[in-house]
Image (cartoon, rainbow, N blue to C red; front, side):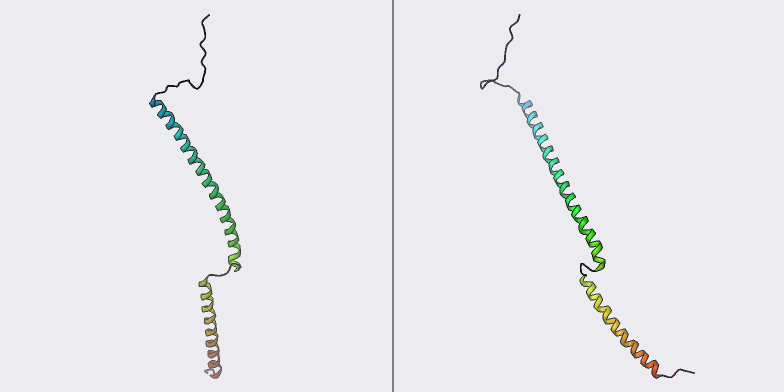
Length: 110
C-alpha cells in the first residue's frame, strides 16, 4: 500500500503563484468591489429619488387643491392686476354716471 503524504498548513507553509495570476486575482476583486459600490450607490439614489417624488406628489396635490381657492395666497402680479381692475371699475362707474346724467338732461329727439 502506498504511503499517503499528508499536507499540513502552518506558519512556515509556502504558496507560490506567478505575478500574472496574482494581478488577475487582484483585478477581479477590485472589479467586483467597484461593481458592488456602484450598484449600492445607484440603489441609494433611486430610493432617495422615490422619497422626493412622493413628497413632491403630496405637495403638488395640496397645491392643486388650495391654490385655485386662494388658500395659499396670490402672486404679486395678481395683486397688481386686482388693483388695476378695481381702478378701472371705479372709472367706468364714474363714466356711466356722467353718461346717464347727460342722457337725462337732454330731451329725446323727435
